[in-house]
Image 1: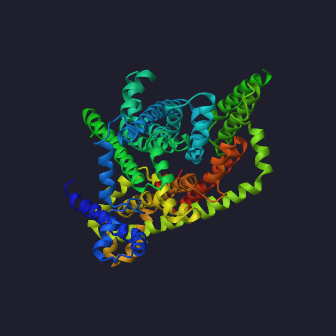
Image 2 (image 1 turned 90 degrees about the vertical axis):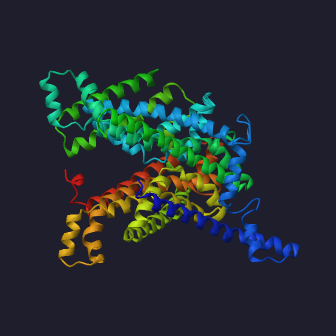
Image 3 (image 1 turned 180 degrees about the vertical axis):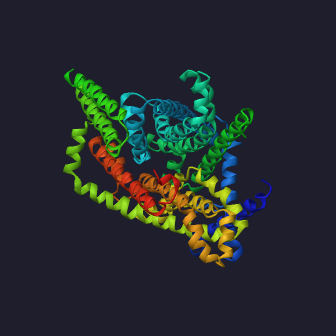
Length: 287
Length: 279
């Protein structure tokens, strides 16, 4: 852990350095344009100062994004429509609902596939094929159609999240539930264990490491689903709506702050699963 | 009512056939036939339910309707396919995966960089990178260049993380053996480490193939010229022409499967020695 601290720090600070330099480079044309129109001379110093503080820059500097995030999280009431926490909560609730549904569906399918040969042979290829369909592309249709049927609000977004997150869970759980080897299964048989007992005492516990790995992927996918699901709803609320509204009005700082917020959300959610994973596996004596 | 009964009968029949087929020893034939029967059954049930309950085509068109629409508007579909898949997704895929591969080889030479970039790359690969789409559309304009840029950004980090991990997959023993042969860095890379990294590289390529299509289509929601699959989907939803939307989805599904399948076929040819390919 400590070994990789310095390298990671170097890489991250290099990224920030590139970001600042790129901000100068990308925003300079607009700064020059302004200067020639007002007849002012631009020294290197004023040029840099200008590129880092424009109102609608092509690429906002990190500190501008940071200030915007601070302004829209800490200095706004949570209930306010301008609060980023409010929008994050909208997205988070859809993500979590979709994740829960997807995990449930994924585990149920995996149990069916492991225990039923017909299901294994007929469903499994389609589960894999279902992921080659770019579901995110048909998200607008799902939202609009479900809206027409009268289902609106949280559920349509959660459905898209569910579709994206069930796949890693199915694949991981099928692998996990099949991970006990013949020796262990034979041992259960010598103890005269019922299929029920074999499942709860052997197959389920040994699938846990696989489950947590897939949960992490599923959670990240589910957040992407919720964000894209918010795009076609007419940009009402949520991080996706902030992205869309920002791109309509050229509010780049708003786009970037929504983006950073989404990244932080993803990192936190995946991090939480990581902690639960470590605790669980330690109690089970696996880690 | 007849249609509902028909759907239920077909479902029972399909399940019975599959149960019979899967009870037999697994061969090439049953491995192919069972999923096909399952898929056909699903389509027939869909048709039956839509007709039986008289679901409005604005909500869910029947498969037959989608098929006629598909046949009638192949020219539009082809134009969108060229715009989105060939120009947007494929060029971005090649650029993104290629540059990630080169960067990975560069990174691999320096242990410091490797230890720094791998966690960061893994972290970025889990982020909702698709959110970069509006920014890149703003930078590169509405045409396919911005779509390719979105695809590059989306595929870069998964590919990088996989390749870097793969390059460190050969064991110390194998590397020592190369050294006793007197092989230099490049020979070791070409004869040992790149082949050993291939399973990882192809894993990255497969992940990237699905991401590329998604990236190209979703980027079109943020602005595009008046062609392209994403554009067609979002405008047709507005016009309630759902049969055209579904026709686009069929194209996307075929392209996605073909793309993934193509990469998987090349993988099988290249990494024939790997345990996961030997059945």
